[in-house]
Image (cartoon, rainbow, N blue to C red; front, top):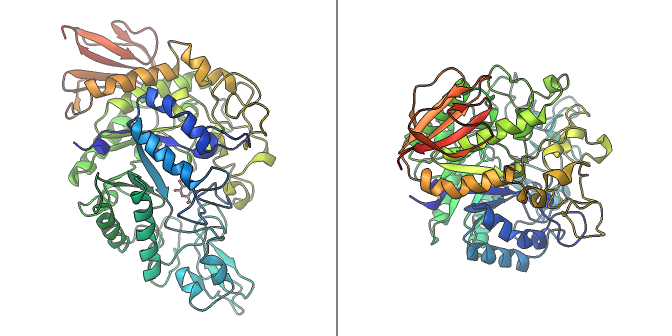
Length: 533
Ligand code: BGC
């Protein structure tokens, strides 16, 4: 087995991880100082969200220079040092590459705006429709809301599937292809172990940029067959390196069959499987998602991946803190329904703890988003004036967006930044709530039963119990309960509302909550092994 087939990957949202220089924004000095925390947690790799220079129209997913470090985060020398130190601590380093679009401050886009010869061909500029070209060239909407087109001073329009500051590249242009292959090599040469590919299903658009028609129709901007050729050439770049370099696709495609196409042997190594985080807290849905993810990954020889949260979705504790929807959650994340129902974070946290044990016992790769190991909840009541996510503005102030899962981490219970920044620093870039110190690393380290200590125990046990333990074998269980064996170990999860008996002749190795004896209480998971071993 290769490391990435069974790894636990910790997602570092660098802006909110740790601030070393006191400007209220996370940075490389902070990250470097917390490397020992990551090593003690027991993870195998970090995936760092974009750390490149950026005007921050979309928190760094608008990249102005793919070969440099954002000055607020540090320098290239510090990045190099971090990569080396992480390797020294046994941690692999994965970066985020953003190939669908650049920043509007990228060296290619400003000449394109000025219509310098050939410059517009690297992007998707088109004349408008209507008598005077006053209508956008097609009906595509931005993912963040509003039209996906912005009109320039000379009346031409350019495409941006996300914010206006993120113009889409033209991947039919040979220079675009060559540039990204060189960017990959630049970071591989520095020792980076791989890339998470942002919007991997974008890049190639249907010829002629046709209208989409209804919102239910397949989107002509996504999952076009031509995109696979790009990944074949990227794979060839990665394969020039030793030790192995890898790719992880972020591809929100309509089916696991379509997702599997990105994982063919000459393409990408692995892809996020988002059904796990879209499933409600209900045994039947979770079981179906697990079976489906395992079989579709197996069909192309890739490991399944398990994602419970990331910087784009509401935190797990909050998703589980209310009554659960009947089926899979769609991309609007049920926020409309949530407004009517009080969140019970205690309940959500019990379920999140249980789901963490489920996640970490499954075959394949598990992703842990920073703060998940602290049981942080979504901050749903940020004042409107501090919101940074472009979704808020572009949706016409109807969708609050993703800031609530991006709040700077609490490291200690000391006010005002809870150890995120050094003393006397500038305010944090998003405000932390008053109770944040209670969730901090320092407080949780002192509490045997904390979420942090649950993660530490689970990650310490995982190699022995689950890595390479074989396939999931479902065990007979009642409604609301999941039970499976992998090798000698078993994982049981109770999503129902009454306790259920546990198998006899087994010993509890780890439980997600209190009260586990012969009975598994509601919203609790347990790892078992045969009593004699
Ligand atoms: C990233 C988002 C980002 C978008 C545009 C997504 O897949 O995860 O955070 O806003 O791509 O780059």
